[in-house]
Image 1: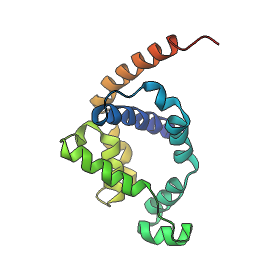
Image 2 (image 1 turned 135 degrees about the vertical axis):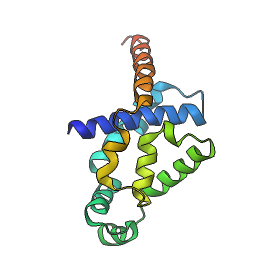
Image 3 (image 1 turned 180 degrees about the vertical axis):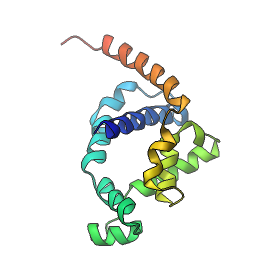
Length: 148
């Protein structure tokens, strides 16, 4: 559970950085709405993407096979989104600045084993600088909440 929480934290940090990089001017508070951290947690712990991708890593079956087996042919959004995000990152030569997003794409495209995810993101220097930036924004946001 600690590892999952750490990956979710890194995912949130990369989400914030991605939006800031490609769509500057966003409000940090948006990430604390149901469309942000709540959706991230729900998706990571109980969504279709998590369920199918867990089997993808465990069984080696294709995403298409698992969509047919587990979802009755419904399509996942995660792998397609990972591919689109990776294309945007590549277009600006930023894949190394988003190691979690890049690793997820590489796993979906079978360029990387799921078991290698942690090695891909462990001790990445970018996370430390984003963490400091993120912490400062969080403190500022909480200090400026309207009084109830």
